[in-house]
Image (cartoon, rainbow, N blue to C red; front, side, top):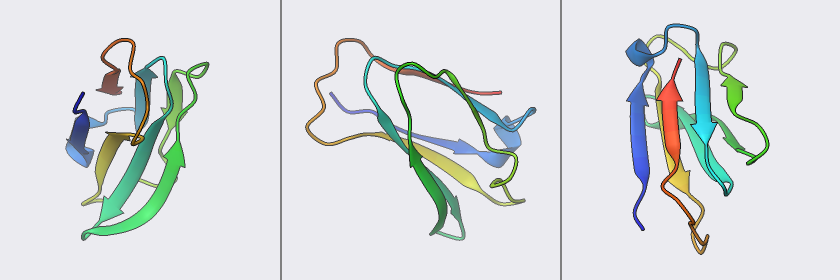
Length: 79
């Protein structure tokens, strides 16, 4: 299953990322095509605060970890 998502900083009102997924996902925050912060989500946690990492022209990329078995399609929202 392919799941790559790119979210522009303008989509974030509360500078939070909401993730509903049964598996960990990789999150990359990029500025000018350079990774400035990255982390791996955990299925038990839904809300991630990005306020300290989002800059004026940032984009957030969310990707499946290669080799992961996906039971249902992840749901990711910018808050």
